[in-house]
Length: 305
Ligand SMILES: [Fe+2]
Ligand SMILES: [Fe+2]
Image 1: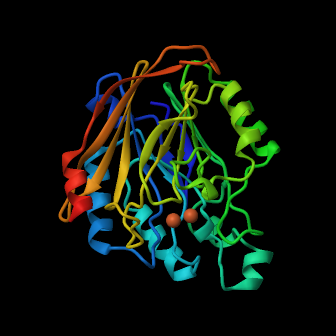
Image 2: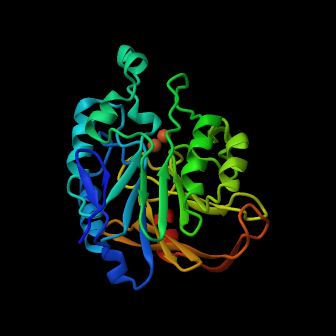
Image 3: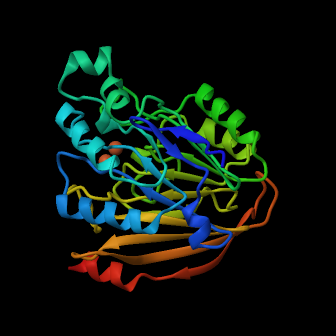
């Protein structure tokens, strides 16, 4: 069997064997993880998450940044040890917390060196298989304290990559959100207005982001030309009004179901979920239609406690 490989932190991830295909028929399963903040993390939840992911065996684990709390070497080492336990292929992009904040020389001279040494040399990696094209985009900006930026060149580069795969689900992974829930407008990535039409024209279906520590799923606009999925913080203690969690994205032909998995104090359980059918042409209004929405009673109970 020919085994294609993608480059990850310290080696490779095999794509040829697709455990999710075996477990879920024709479907693909993507686990979307974000904002671990090693150094300000819960070790119990970290262990539970890696155990759950290894039992789940998703097609891909996509990590949308903020591996560390302050970009310190020991924090990157802890993140690397955790990543090395994952059995599935994974792909990652850095977040603003992965750029050292207080070590000024490192921050401005070699801002991404620690991330590239410990996590992944490639800052904008791609994962391809027979149904998915998943590409990362590095939105970190050393000139801003925590805000992100996407340039025209980055959007164009991503568009070229996605355009080569018109028959696959096209998923962009970045740290800073391009589409934000109400109340988080200040955290929207700089350059989003210019980048979104480029990505839309390239057929990007879904943008996966983090940074807010708040989970959500929404259309990029009222016309639902593409979907924006936010993951909360998977294992960190930096909670913002909701429990730790991450997302499952299940792809079955032209239906995508996003399930928030939330930590109930002892394990991860299903929270809210939404299903969308992809039906329209690239870039056109009504490309995605919501066909189901389930409230996560357990998630609500956790949030209130
Ligand atoms: Fe974060
Ligand atoms: Fe962040």
